[in-house]
Image (cartoon, rainbow, N blue to C red; front, side, top):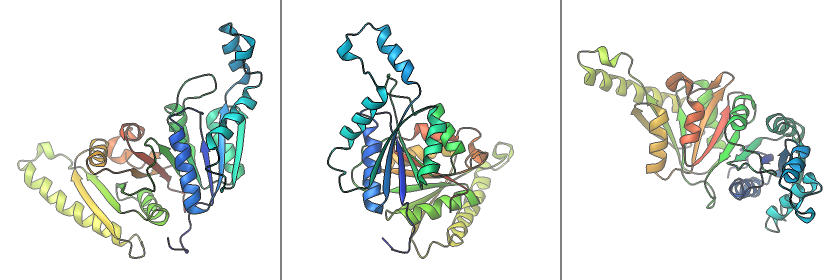
Length: 293
């Protein structure tokens, strides 16, 4: 990796302590090791009193009731990390509060460069990170958010950057080129307005395809990527369908998409289904806000 490239120096991972979220923890540890970054591991308990009430309502024996959910969560975090991460600079945090607000506050105080999340469960010591929490974080965070779904098998090897040729998606492309050494493919799913009203829909689609190819090539050339080789894919159709299908067919392990203050830049193409795209992808997703430099 080029030493002049600025990669994250501080990574925050929010985990619900589930076995599935171990994937996100393993990915965060791997990235911290690759980038020589500090790592903060955060677990948020929405209400310790609620957890105590959950156990009390089930009339469990005293030995089965955690006297201090915060202490139990901290112990589990230590156990999850084990000795494999002993070479890293790691801070373990357990806090009580609203998950979204707490994650954003900790990210700011830790001066994080990246937030990592995993899929989750719904148990007393766990809090679901899919759904509302992830959607709110993706829309509100000024930091890139990495949603981990797949079990890490080394570094990312095949990365797709979704684009609508906006400045926000240019920011996402530049960040992906800076952070990762893996091959990058820029995927532009284009639309053909009023194709159904044309007397020659096929010719119209071919004309738009030619223009889409030219626009995408110009977009890459103007992105100042320091001679980084970028593959280009332009396809007619909705990105909400094409990108997940392409990622599945080509064994893509990371999809990068840009976001802006009003939501996903892909909203311009697929309406309000930016979050649905993240949900449908089976690989990891990195959401990059337009403010990221």
